[in-house]
Length: 195
Image 1 (cartoon, rainbow, N blue to C red):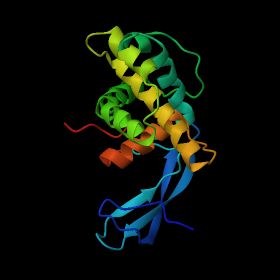
Image 2 (cartoon, rainbow, N blue to C red):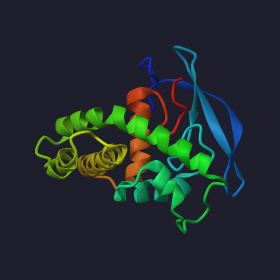
Image 3 (cartoon, helix red, strand yellow):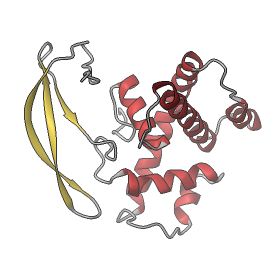
Image 4 (cartoon, helix red, strand yellow):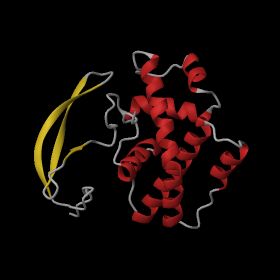
């Protein structure tokens, strides 16, 4: 079996380096996360399942509906949070959601040109008219349009890569975007922003 995990130093040989417990909210389940240590640079890495985001205690099933609703609407974060949505397993308070949205918007601004470049390299025949229309509707990109564009490009890139590899993927556009973010920036999609 081919090793698909590569350290930032380029090494592909890892040593099992213990486990740690991680609580998953809101269900308060406990998961055991495997750690690996790079044999070259001695850096340790946590091997997270695709339904987890680094440095966030909720799973993708809880987080994703909020981002889908946000990208479908034209509301600001504050207006979005002021509306009541009947979503299962909501975080305990709006401050958690506000933090998620601020991080998501910031990362999407960084990832947007990277997504477009990667998609054009993988599938130059791809029609980006839908995402370009999002850009052209507003002279200044709003947080909403940046996130929507990133999600559209993420979905297209996921689709193209699964077709190219001829595999069926269980990733959603958001979990794929999280993986893409980690690959390109060495940070999880919802990881804390630098001060």
